[in-house]
Amino acid sequence: MKQQLEQIRQAALCELDGCAALPELDAVRVKYLGKKGELTAILKQMGKLSAEERPVIGQLANEIRAGLEEAISAKSEQLKAAELEKKLENEKIDVTLPSKKNALGHKHPLSVVLEEVEDIFMGMGFDIASGPEVEWDYYNFEALNIPKEHPARDTQDTFYITENMLLRTQTSPVQIRVMEKQQPPIRIISPGRVFRSDAVDATHSPLFHQIEGLVVDKGITMADLKGCLESFAKRLYGEDTKIRLRPHHFPFTEPSCEVDVSCFRCGGKGCPMCKNEGWIEILGAGMVHPKVLKNCGVDPEVYSGFAFGMGLERLTMFRFSIDDLRLMYENDMKFLSQF
Ligand code: DAH
Image (cartoon, rainbow, N blue to C red):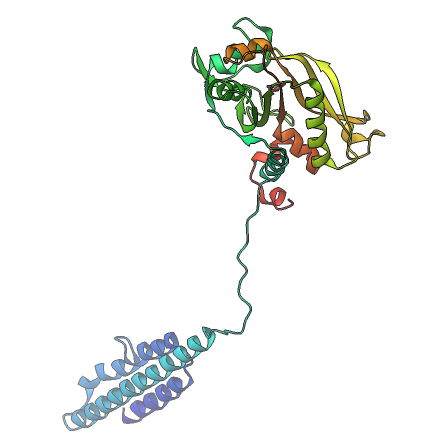
């Protein structure tokens, strides 16, 4: 039995020596010192020994157990120290490495174009005005010479809060609000959100943006309208840009027109961008209707003015050759990071 014990000691020490990690060490402990361990098994046979042998073997077994326990604990300390060392080595900070770059955001294409438009008009002496998105029927329609049964309301169906309160369909009501508060001279643009109950497709959205313009003073004529919008078009699309006025109808202007710019892609020769027309429509405009001036307490015998309204999405789509309106609202970084 003595021999067996010696063998166990040798084998255990040898295995301990070969342990490279804590779980392995624990396995060795269990194998020899555990309840079903090899040393324990020997000790269970002690009863078979003679009275003389028992204390001798008992002492040796205890000695071996104590020796192994000590060796295991020493090895455990050693392995723990090595593991810590390795961890520290891995977590070492190299202060000379280049730092991680913070991704810097940038403006949405709609904001880029809006700010350009604002800069251009502010350069011509315009102020920026704003009005509410939830608007009275009176400001959105009635005061703009669009009475209840007017067919122009059909194309501008919207979301009603009450019978007389709605989400504005255009930025034109800001014209009324400005003229009610301020006597001419008036020179403002008013950008903002507008709403229509339109289904979403590549060119329609129930929410979009317009930029309204209004100039009222003594002696304002159609020539001022044309000169102002031509300067604007040249600043936005380049000095070679020409504009063309086509007769149109808006209830709040008389005469009214639509304004086209010569295609900035092909210079007017015709290309897919302008659908081979050479011209691209960018806004509606006209001389403020005398009835509208009167509605706001401005005397049409003394003052005259022009107004215009354009869609920011449309301007932006042409500006950056974007062919689907929906891209501008999807917050897709792959799209947005291009601008
Ligand atoms: N409010 C018009 C629309 O949404 C656009 C417009 C046309 C505005 C002519 C004007 C204007 O100020 O004079 O279709």
